[in-house]
Length: 245
Image (cartoon, rainbow, N blue to C red; front, side, top):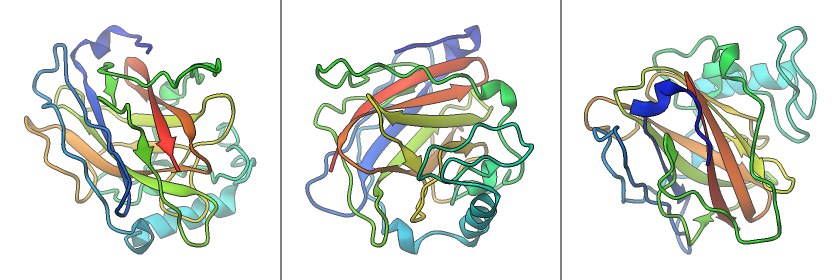
């Protein structure tokens, strides 16, 4: 777990992971500690409907934009962004998020695009993140269940992110499998390489105290140990979880 920047002192990002669909999945609960006491602990799992049937017109428009601009290891010309890993589409800013509402144009500031510093795979147990701040998965010792998506090589699980009212800035979420392997986002047959969040998402659970929440979708091609890197204004945090295929 890594944290940087004094602005993170009052911030808590809470993540709830749940397998989409039913049967055999174990969700990650969340726990809160430290100064951000206004963000409540989350212990309930959330099971989403089939995300392939809930993708919105906004998401489809963003997918078209990202696909035509570059994917599968190609970057947008002249936008200064790194290329997406092979097999993933490049995120087209806030509008790529399927449940976007409010601020759905533009993208996270360049200052959030810090180098990825994920844990190394050493052959030992998956170093699952417990009670980390500002980002947290809570207790995920049993892993997170993923299920297949028709017509796609990428499995899917629902992930709900929360931030308290004390943090009003954007989030940039990226990740990878420890030791090699891509981590994607979204509901399309070809996932996006990262997640950019600003205004609270449609249909998201209420956050006590006026914070924000987002229902999102994480994609993997195989079970194993994975890590998110969550970057916000003044902080950078690593969240590690085990994907169960």
